[in-house]
Length: 329
Ligand SMILES: Nc1nc2c(ncn2[C@@H]2O[C@H](COP(=O)(O)OP(=O)(O)O)[C@@H](O)[C@H]2O)c(=O)[nH]1
Ligand SMILES: [Mg+2]
Ligand SMILES: [Zn+2]
Image (cartoon, rainbow, N blue to C red; front, side, top):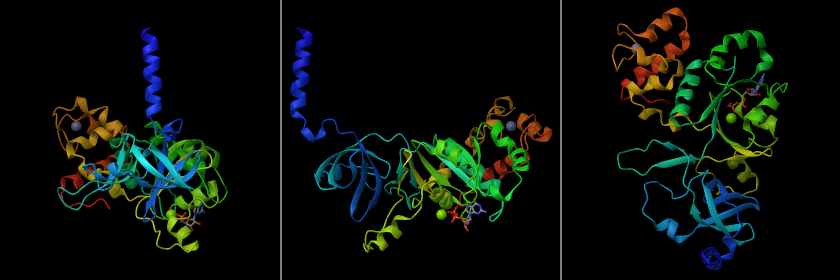
């Protein structure tokens, strides 16, 4: 009897739900521009507007819907639709707002991982940004991997051993080349079915890698728009690029996007795994691991157990966090 009642209720509920809601999987907002919210769905891309109640609810964010949001939607015409609701965000990258009380500007939501693209030369290898990005990834609960692109220009063995400390810290290390296609399979495996932010210095080959992976992928949406003569539909935010192999990539938001500014100086060492595992042994609870006596971190730097470059980058970041005027860009 009870189960019958439940069954009936279930049926009545189903009847009261608009038929368009049934069996429709959520879509992903891949771009927002003056033409609307572009939603990638199992049925193609739909240019959507927002259901009135979404626009009218009080909120803390600049826009009620962000790139990367998983949304429930209803078609309203050929490739047109309406966003009905937004699923809770797993995480988000936000831009620092200009002043207190400003609404949060979410650049992209629901990211899985960060791929930090570096190169051995043109531009030269610099670990500073890599280590800052690793901290940002940890802070934002994203997996991170390091990619050394332009591997066609180097002796692999030499660079493998030079960068082995990152693998010791459990960060995957990919060697790639957009020129001779080294490592493209591993890159594809890494990106497949995930939403990945590509980051790194300009010129390291992020766009080239994406083109090598999937021709045409790295075209900026602005360029696509001007080619089709719809120049006014220029992008006002980050876009997700859809991978044929499943998943999405975001090509380079600046480091400013990564919320590094709101790390408290005393929390920085918790984002360096090799410092974090030692710091419970420090004599002072708020040890900065720079000058304090009986600091096992300093001892590990001395003995070479902690890599000198990592430690130097730690101290530089610490100084910049202690200086309130510092701008990470
Ligand atoms: N030798 C070599 N050059 C590359 C490779 N990938 C990119 N480049 C070159 O590096 C320059 C910058 O590449 P680009 O993709 O625009 O870098 P982005 O700024 O990170 O997007 C271009 O001149 C590319 O041709 C590579 O794997 N090997
Ligand atoms: Mg580029
Ligand atoms: Zn210490």
